[in-house]
Image (cartoon, rainbow, N blue to C red; front, side, top):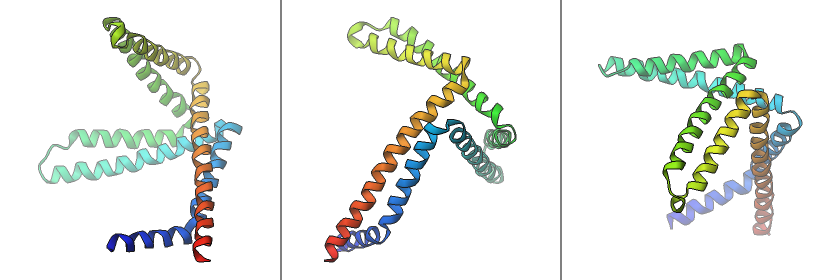
Length: 190
């Protein structure tokens, strides 16, 4: 009985708010298109969102560090991490062009190290256990690292395009869902 009331309330809420779902989908479609039409603008908007998140996360880290310090628990590494997060966020706001290249260089280093470890692991594995797939994964990581090292803005464009594909597809699905809920609500009201 209680679950049917909750389900009924949820349906009512969705029927009244179908347009918010469709609007959210429309925004996703627009952002997806922006990623293809102007990856630079989309990239900088993502950069600023990440910078803001880094500062907010650093603020929460500061609060956690001070809370642990008051309780006599370990707090130094929390404080160090929080300060680094805040510094990265501020730097990203202050020098966004440098921040984009810096982030992609860090991602490139990680991809390079991961690719090398996978490559070494692939030669220690026999074919029956997936040597070929591990070798392919290593080459993908090494290729991605190379693109990011030698052309970080090209790497940014590729990542933005993938985000654009996702945003467009997800947004389109939400728009269809919103209008489908609207149609179902109209049928139920008749």
